[in-house]
Length: 486
Image (cartoon, rainbow, N blue to C red; front, side, top):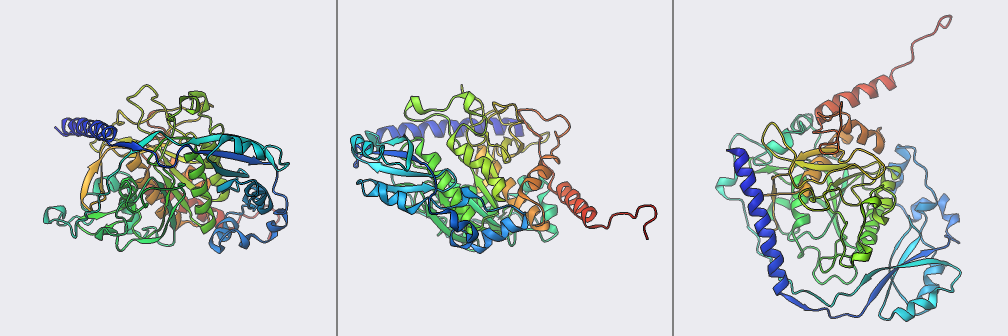
């Protein structure tokens, strides 16, 4: 019966999604700022920035520097800011620089005439450029939904169950045992990169969450991040809510940054740049983990869409960025994607990135089964993907109205894992990002024979805690004496 209910819920979600798409198609309006274009401009070097490497506090927060120091990770040339003089040279040609990436040494340039961009090609500092966005002819005339429930209903509370509706999805990963040790993410900072956080600043269930701020990296957003889609709100809720007997998330004591990189008006390659800018910001303010429930493969302009051979962790711009994060001391948890039932079927980018946790979705009933929509691996270079799985078909969460509900997607499996990864790392801060990632992988129920559907399987965070503490104790113990030594 539970399996039948799950299938029916999946069908209802699919029908609702199709209805939303049809409704959007009827509400198209002309794009007001067209024609317009955004180019990614690759710069030749970072002239004038090299002397800053000895002064990281000028471009990284104290917390970010401490995270690197703790993991013995060097500050390198990728951390240095883009050369300000190069930005000025481009702007002096009448260009509007709207963003930049220090990791890739690139800037985003917005123009209304493609002929204008050619004027910068002769600048010695410009190595190459790529068109990553062009204004659409029309966009959805989107309606703001601001209504918020002031409190939970009586039936939302489950007497005697502190976690409320979230219990099964936390317990499946043995996260409740971590929480009983007082490990709820305190002292850890998580960035949530998503498409919008509707009413996250107003929902009563999130009023006690430690939200450090909200930043928007999308150029010319039509709707503020706190009024846009509630996808990010749902993602955040699975970690940050702390409402006993109704809902307790996987890291209710962690601090959060809410970062929007998704342009809801179109689907184009520039979103990989926005994502990168958001990740670099997360690095700079000292975030320990990033949850990204975003993925890309098909864009509005077919010639820019990704191909399967791109899934090597290094071809896509966004995957290059994601693959750098562990070397910056950050654990990235990314959803695998929901393409399992479509023609693509495979993981999206940046889920193909190396040194991250890519999370697929399973059903909540035992024995657990992979959700049919959950994207599969492997990566193009043969790595196991997804890395792990968690409940996401469906998961309980809190929507933009403040109501406890269920929704489908690897988008909601990923943050459950991310929150518990923060709790685990809280207990062993001496571990590096790569060590935490590997520790979690090696506690998956499928670890002895990982595959490209479940990956290493459903991780056991209590086992990860015990193994991690044991290895830390062994490393701290004095070496046994050798013959002849006193």
